[in-house]
Length: 385
Ligand SMILES: Nc1ncnc2c1ncn2[C@@H]1O[C@H](COP(=O)(O)OP(=O)(O)OP(=O)(O)O)[C@@H](O)[C@H]1O
Ligand SMILES: [Mg+2]
Image (cartoon, rainbow, N blue to C red):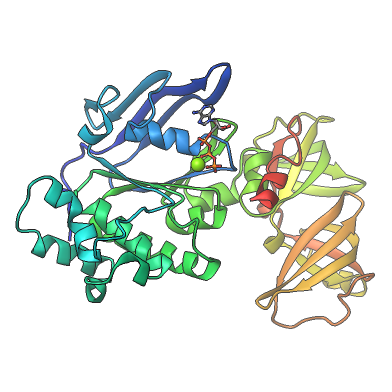
């Protein structure tokens, strides 16, 4: 079921220079952002970074201090919320407790004076797989089911854009995961633009076509999940999205397209095309590599590591077995807490705390960042979330 006309491109959400200040505090700095019609778009960031404020400006619930909001060709900046083709689902989905599920979903239609609601409501309930629960009251449903009712109640108004502000925040982890897939399925099925606010990076990456990573009222980087993960442009994005090992290094030389860097005596190769930092010889650069890209060899096996791989020696300080993988923390001269995730296939019993090891990885998996940034940006935020 498509509730939008695929040929109608009038649904892009375009924010031009919108900002929000409260007194002398800037919650959102002037922001330019286009959310293509029909996409699943996530605003991701730590608490207080301006996600809800941005969403509320799209909904019309918050007046921008500067800038405009367009929906397709239409400038909706001055329109009140109820005149915008936009609906919002909040974390507290606030269903009407005295109405059954059917009537909760029918509410928007009845308010508009539509009499024959049965077919549309049933379609919506099928979409969110609650056809069987139509005559129950909200308190008789699980958190995830109630959340789906809230989505159905918003979608029945055929908005061009559905705004979701931490809609899964109240659910436990397992249900959250289920609902992430469910929401994604619903979005694909109806084809409506979803703008989803979350502070959970895994949630954003699972669901969204495009993720905008926000930090301190600004979008730091915007892209497809895999692109953000593999090619972070700032230390904040590198640390906030998953885990990155960041090493302080010095540019030693150029070798063709590669940059040769030195980190605590080790020479590492950084592909020139993967560095967002200037690579002047003698200059500083932060070299990054993701934990799952790294191989871990006991020091006795170092000779069997293929040529051409980046390698660093260290000592295991901690291991945690988490089923699909084992996570190691390795103390290296260049990086005291190097994280390595190894899939559990053939576990080398010698890889225990205290063991001398060599970390090695394909140089192509190395990225470079500007060393003028805080190397720990985004780390504490993620732990606090
Ligand atoms: N009405 C207001 N008056 C003053 N400051 C406000 C107001 N609303 C929001 N702020 C501030 O603006 C900043 C951004 O708030 P916002 O609600 O957009 O954050 P958020 O990214 O949604 O955070 P969270 O993940 O905690 O919901 C915060 O520092 C907040 O304290
Ligand atoms: Mg918020």
